[in-house]
Image (tube, rainbow, N blue to C red; front, side):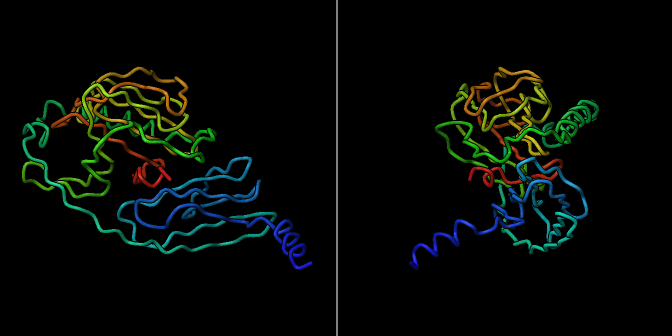
Length: 262
């Protein structure tokens, strides 16, 4: 009888109004699940919620203050406040870079500005694509990780911006796969810093960016499937050797790609 009662309790247990997958730590991707038709705000910014109740957001590398999540369901307003855990970041030294890549000459400023605008525009897309909620895969099969998210970079002895991606070292020409279904929103073969560059939109402001590609086999507007070959690994742009630099974004918030490989 006890067993029957327990089964009935579990069966009729109401779905929580708000659930999260992911750690509330600097750099983390968070997947949210709520009841359909719920309105959600993150830090007073309205965000998209799917028909099934899924949504996503991220926590920046250096965020210190708590994150405020507001949701409105069936006329009832609720607030959740989450403390953000602090991370320790590595220091990474890279020597041997051409001086023009550490400190670009004035004649390429306009080119860099154009590149940044293209990347920034692609990252602002807020589509209804549902793929962000699915399990992502690694972009290549055999690799050595040579660079991690958040590390403070010192280039040719000069401190520079932190590294916001994961560097996967492998042989030049290694096939590169789409980590998740998505739509290509940027495909450029020769950006100044990032070389061959692709951005995939996975929905709700979640995008992945591939850098330093040798070959690119997709164009803007293409729909890709998880595991599809999209090009080959290279060392284009600012790179000292063959590797794939993967970035993860929630709009303009730079996240740790390892947190989506759950």
